[in-house]
Length: 154
Image (cartoon, rainbow, N blue to C red; front, side, top):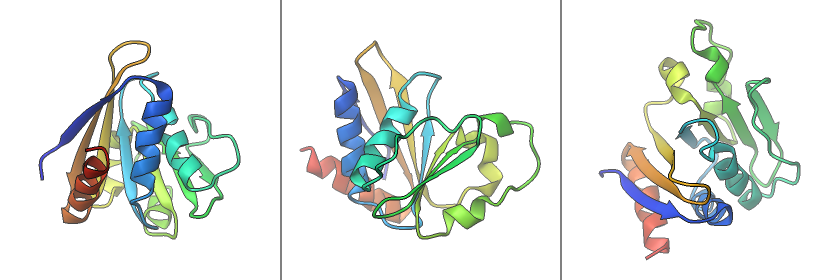
């Protein structure tokens, strides 16, 4: 399945799309988020967290690399930005193959540790309110999820 795109026109719309995506996810699923600083990666993660029943405030994990949130399904929010030149495995597989959902920002910096199948979401800043969301499923499982996501907005 090829990539799918949609635009959101307000932060709450971006969160709603992320929440709808979260409704289709299962433990062990991995979502990667790409986009410039300030594009809305953490906003997207907040939408996933809200659907998963996370009660704590979701913030960017930039200085901690991994933040774990308790919800109906655990959420692992990983920011790999500071790992661009790191060569060590800090246990990502423990998260990727666990009972939680992993959301990875700046995933290109840990490409060697990512599961072969995953969903890549690119968020492009258009203006203060508008974002272009591009969903690229890697693997048949994620192709079905993206298809179901877009059917829910048809």
